[in-house]
Image (cartoon, rainbow, N blue to C red; front, side, top):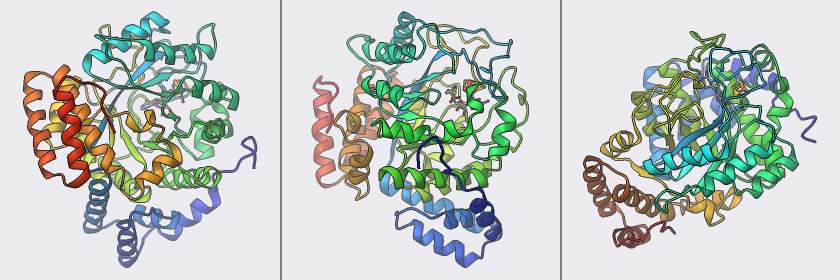
Length: 463
Ligand code: SAM
Ligand code: SF4
């Protein structure tokens, strides 16, 4: 099948599975949860069965299972990143987004390369090592080269000798040749969200510009992988359509990537629709997802694709973010701004949507550490070439723990020494000691060695 005439999503199959398991038998739910604990992933039918749970006790069992998987595979690590919005120019009309072309309620701006370096320095100053570069779908006169130059500028920026070590990218779908150029800039993950996989609803909310082409978008990750980008990120904008449908469709999409390339996505993002300045749906998403259902979504995903990272942004409140760490979230953003130039300047009304968590990075880190989670700034896998299939081969038997645990601690120590407030440093140092004390074998000896090297003044140490 070529990427141009794909049919990755089988609508008939989704609808019939959803109908079949609308009210699953409790025994079926128990069987699926037992299967989930084997951490080998779930089928479409299994996911539909978990979707259908309508009993509080079974919901609690789903949460407990997700928590068990999260703890076994990821331990207490939480990878930290910050989005960097380089432009809010956009030629598309996505009814839910403040950047849509006809919205006159925001100030338009595309940062130049100097400004991008300044924004990056502001993030480095906060202690960030990973950036997610984000753009609307319209670039200044350089065209797509603008995105390539911007990635380079982020890598080039320095503050007190420190730099950004991994740039992930969330921009509109590209051709295979353009993806090759993006890969040559040494990006980490390329991510793109289908928004909704339901064709009818997709058509209703994408009413102008190139993004109206559902097929070009749904095939983007195949083209990215064809171009050699082996870490790709997938996602749905929850609230646009029935989440039960979109979860199953996303599983089909993942299955297609696995079939074609032997490996699925590196990350799944779970954005939930937020009010956006001047958007058509500024008050109410068409299919609102309640907080309870949102927790369920995260827990189902953790059970269904145990080795794929789940990303939670600052769209969500501090409380919801805390809840979902236990259910499967493995990466979070902190101190985010969604308006170009927002890190250097006062916030204005040009952001993409309202944020739920406004706390500065240091406060988020302190909160996370107080809960016993170790904030990780590690970029080791990608820099040592452990991406795509290699990453999954290492992750699946659990061997990744011997790398990720120690690397999380050494990069957290680097953060505490160079960027943290005294209060955060105190809490963080106690957490590092406690975590190492609870480790055993190779991970423990590696952690002691790496953290010791950071204490002695080295930086950027990882295994
Ligand atoms: N313009 C590119 C695109 O649409 O793919 C990439 C960047 S776009 C700024 C990133 C994502 O923001 C979109 O894929 C969409 O899911 C999300 N988004 C847009 N409006 C939103 C809203 N009101 N609330 C939450 N997320 C939103
Ligand atoms: Fe533009 Fe992306 Fe917003 Fe759509 S979601 S209006 S493509 S920035």
